[in-house]
Image (cartoon, rainbow, N blue to C red; front, side):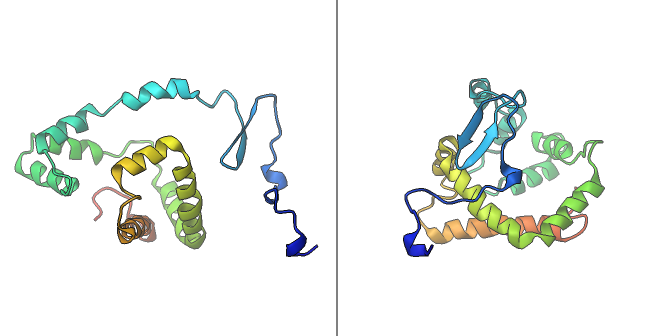
Length: 185
């Protein structure tokens, strides 16, 4: 069979045996080219919908205090305000955000970071192709991305810059040992 005689009326994607669903009785859901079996670990969208209205009262109060403009670097504003007033909402936020929970396993985080760096070329392919495509194909996510303009800017260069900034952030967080620990720049 040649490329010219291939049946192009149906998509071709080999299914690895490891990806086949071994059903235990739950309904099989097919979305965005992925199949999975619905079970008790999944949550109905009707149960998730009310959570869309749950906010972060502490951050809301902090933003109300700071009154940032769209062009402001909010993190810099928080750090400046905390330095000015140790009793401010900004100082409380930084203290809470900088407190590492006891359950954090730094050794496991380091292993994950090293794995990410070792597999960086593959990670980039997955992040830029699968994650973005999947994100843009989910209507509720698309609505947020479109409203924020983060990946739908009129200037394609701005979108590429944002993607590269995100990639650089990931590399900076994983390439140097201990980079994810609090207090690191």
